[in-house]
Length: 497
Image (cartoon, rainbow, N blue to C red; front, side):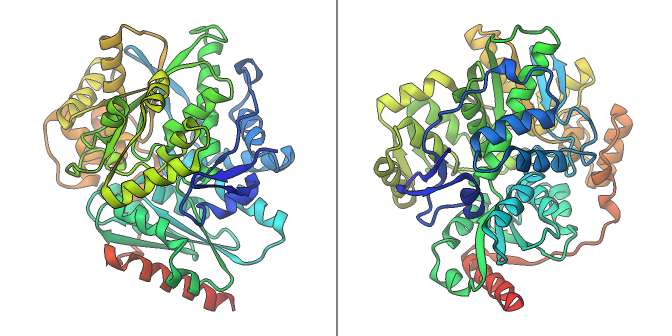
């Protein structure tokens, strides 16, 4: 059985379903496979449907669930909520392919994992015969929030609270969250950035004020710090590889490159896990926006927060503290929890840490980082539309820009797949401006104009937003985050008891 251990204390050991319930370790560490003992060869998933591929891969890593339990979760998650049977179709572009991850209920890649996580969590609770409330605390830089709210709405024995930066998400993302349905959901804006939101969620698991309020309530997370988020993201790497094989673009066993727009490092870490269990990945290109902390780190091995935080047109990547990087460093260190704890403490206390040359060399064997300016991002959106009539959002544009620069710089034209992480209509004002040079003030006016310009239909969930009632308007100071969480826990406890 695959065991999951904390990156900061290897004596903290859980099974897969226990790690799904826990979310984050009590010491602030992230549950990570103790060892990667499974192998899934790409030929094993050829011609599989997305659901079949998901069953094989998720069950291999969360193997204390039965295969039938995983199958029920996958079939329930990947159904008509997605607007294509392929779930994640591929689209050819210049120099590579787009893996379109935004065909789910909230038009962002987070739907892939957050439609199945509530089912995995419910199944885990049934295994434990528990009836307490799981309080899902989630920080979002834009897309995770709505996907989590949609996935957990009215799920029995759960409640979800989402924190997002009041300034720093797109107006469409904000309205998606503010209009969320469900009796068990809450949305709170924070006067700060994503890192502030993420910090309060992480600190909640060890806060005395919060824990004292948790009577009959267990805290968990829907962020990619939860293995139940991370493992399902491995699936689309395998599935897209199988699609290239089935379309005779590559032969089975040949390598591919993946380019991943990256903020919190979860999506690209799933690619690394795919490589570890047998997918022939040559390079993972880490594509960042102007908040280029990861680009610098992958080049130098020095992680430093001593830099300006920049609000960009790709807000889901406006992150300086990339949580899932901790998992990667833990694996590269040979599960050295003492070393990782020291690094994370240095990051918290001094705002930086440095890895040794051996770890840096291991990093560079697989990863390469590029960052894209706002001007380059806009130009990429414009050129791809003008040349190929292909609409992409700013996050995807960061990925396409990184792919083309990598190919030009290295001469490596290994077949390349860019993870296209969101519908362009979630960022319609910036996409429309990038293409036309005209700035429209109203998001829904921009949405209509972009649809007329491109002939690409607006996803139904975004088209209906204009007329939905706003339910959530609360805003707090970042210093009040733990108190707000404690209040939420007390309210859940009182309702439970």
